[in-house]
Structure formats: structure tokens, C-alpha cells
Length: 261
Image (cartoon, rainbow, N blue to C red; front, side):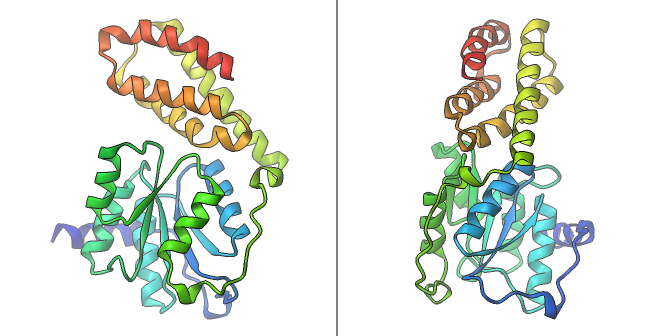
């Protein structure tokens, strides 16, 4: 009963409009649904899937994903695979996947690939337990993405054409670079302000971890992998450090973070 209610709420929340028959493309190797809330990641991953000759539709949270998958089946124009971010507002990737599987949509019908920032054992197990088939770690690498997509999509979907994997970084628009720099500056300011303040509320911790999570998932694509590593270090630390140790550990981590930036 709860799963049915969750499904109904998800469909009701969705602002998306289903495609008309005339709008349905047919030349792509397969049809993907990307579920991702961070705008820079949205653009980067869509650029990769386009480079690899896949048609990709985008939604920004789990509720929209559930609704769009439901409508696609009703319209007899289903997706071939889902790329599902885990940390999203309203409904996360775990819950969305559980609802999709509970509705009767199997892994054979619709493989679900998690996009996760933390590829630890518990995170991977949680993905599999929710009904996902595999994972891709952030920052997403086009070679790994290509390998996973080809592994989980039906062979008949792949027409054998060889796609040349060029550097997506060379295709980054000025607007996308500006967006990344803005997110980077926001994350840096948040970390510096938090260190200067010394004491942190739970709300402030959640906000800074969200900023750092987004930075950790994109920095390497803009030629700053060390910054991404340092952002992830602080993000994880704020989750696991003891409250009494946080101010000192934040001050210690700030130097490496700013140096990488």
C-alpha cells in the first residue's frame, strides 16, 4: 500500500510533459534516463552520453524519475537504462529505485546504474539492495561510462558503430566553466566561513556537505582532481569527525583545500 501511495505521489509531483509520437527520435543506440540534480553534472553527463550516441532525457529528482518511467511505459516508449544519482532532494536514488522495482519493473527490463560519490562497500551494497545493477563513481569518466552502458544494454541496442571518445573537457562551454567556478567559489566561501566561525550547527553542516559533495563530483572534469579529493575529504570528515574535534580538524583541512583551489 505504501509503495502504491509513493508511486501516486511521485507521478502527481512530476511537472514533465510526455513526448508526442512525432517528437520521438529513433537514431540513437539506446534511450537513457539521467536522474541528477546538480546542473553542472547534468550538462557534463549529457555531453558524454551524446558523444557516445545515446539519447538521454533528464529529470532532477527521484519523484520525477518514477513518474517519467511510468509514463514512458504507458506511452509504449520505454527507457532502456537509468543513470541514477543517489543524493537528491525530495526523493533519493535508493527510494526511487525501490519504488520502481516494487511496481514490477525488473532489472532485465530496465537496468539501473547508480552514480555515487562514495564507492565504499556499504554504499555499493545499499545500491544493490535497493535494486540497482551497478555503479559509476563521481567524477564520471567517459571511458567507464561507455564500458558500463555497453555491459548493461541489450546487444541489439548497440549497432556496432565505434564512437571516438574525445575529451569532453575540450567541449566545455564558457557558460559551463562559469557555472563551475561559481559553485567552486561558493564552496570555498562556505568552508572558510565555517572555519572562522568555529562552531557549527547541524543545518550548517548539512549545507556545507552539500556544497562539497557537488564540488567533489565535478572538479576533476575541470582539471582540478586534487580539489575534488580535498572537498570529499572534508565532506566525509564532517560526517564522521566527533563534534568536539570538528573545529580543529576543519582548520587542519582548510590549508590543503585552499592550496588545491
